[in-house]
Length: 114
Image (cartoon, rainbow, N blue to C red):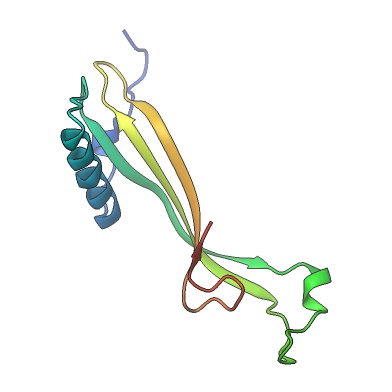
């Protein structure tokens, strides 16, 4: 027996993204004829706004148009985890960490995901 209560993946809040990813995963597994031994759950554990500063070496440059290089690049940090439920604990099977640069971010990162 465990000496402390283990939080379970199912207790973590769902998001629109986690539900869409979970449904897509289930659809692809069914199409491939794969039946997991226990439920697979997707949860977004990190979702926060952030900003990266451009390096000094880049800030002194200019674009060919003469426009100054941006000093900051705003983005959203996303941490998505795939869990498989177990009898006593859930196992993190996969984790993806992404930096999403939207339309508000200047070039060269406009609408990019890393």
